[in-house]
Image (cartoon, rainbow, N blue to C red; front, side, top):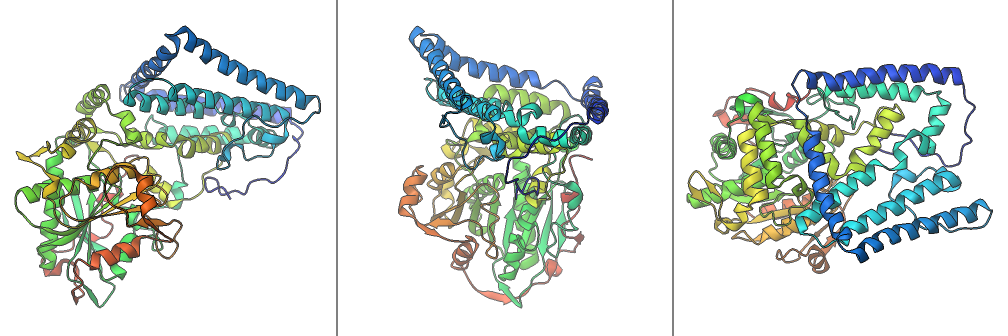
Length: 607
């Protein structure tokens, strides 16, 4: 079954159906009408000046980057000849193989798709000579384009961007993305007399209107989910709130709890309920079942009036204020802490600031896929150079924040063959609603980012890597991670494109205390949300937390089947396993404001 569509793949070649040309004509007219509505929804906010042209900046950067690759190949006649002849030979070989097959001879394919590539799963891609030719032509061209970048002698940042742009182009021109060159789409269009295209164009119009002029691709059926109804259900209360966050405390489910409470700092780029999707996947619920008193920060979804909220204010009014309130509710000065993604970066910065101030507030720190050194920052670095940051800063200055759509698009484009093109084909060409998938619903529920905070983060972390260099200043205090001497559980995931395992491993050596580096299978989300009851992936422990060679680390580590959560619990309780009677929410000090998950998490970026 394809999780994107909820359908089972066909197991045999199907003959093209008979065509009702009159019905197709009517539906094509309806499709054009719906297409006009989609175009109007796209153009209206731009004509009204609510959205300024953005494509020119992206195209300029892509042309400049790919131009440097071509300059390398075309600046030398021998290389230019090699460039042309290698592609020419490939096409001639393909033409020869296709001709032999057309004559009834056996001709082995010159290239085959990756077995994991679902785009070419339909049998027609191999059994039909025309579609097989298109498939191989595309795959050979894609391989040639990738070699073009790989073989060019260019600097590392340019290579990273060139690889990204080439992947986007390759993904976009795939024959699977067009009705006339995709056998499955063509068959479905003829079978339904074009009804699929009408439905798809209607959905396209709806999604552009929902995105207020931007295409908000629906990756999951939004009607199937609602925060507080079937997502984020763990019982608890909001016990404090300010402009930046609500602090949630969850109900105890055991007679006794660990004496040391736990504070979780999620990313403000996304919403905290990734840790509380449903009862079977909820890390928060699982923690309460292990006898942990759990507090979680729920960040505000900011608008223009929070434009000047700085990174320092997120630290002071977010993490440090939350620590104060946890201590007030529990009577414990020190606590366990967890930071996820950029929330982990903020937590590490907070701990370094507190260490510089000689304030001992945490017993331990756990970092989920979080970077403190951005030397090997991964694919997101594609979007961060001096020119891009200046453009973003100018854009954010006008409205006070970065739209959720900009970050959501960036994350999706990192895995466009998984998170963009399958949904364009399924939604807008097949006209089918996507499969109901909670993680992808959460993924689309993105948040805005205040201008001051985001600018500081991009410049100090991605552009200048000041935290790793010991040069970052917060409120006049220079931060040194070596002063953070508490035990750290540093979790990376093997297929992470956002916080690469290599980057997390490399950052482990910056801390001054004992670091337990753990590598989980899968990626940035699925590798973390891997509960013991339904584990999908393995994890590795035991290798030395040094260097940046993940493969070398794995070679010395021990592989374990199942979830890493019990391993973390064992490590956590080793820091102190004293128990006290289960605590009442607020501890008589903080008055509950409303039920969890609270109001802030329900504020959506799109209406």
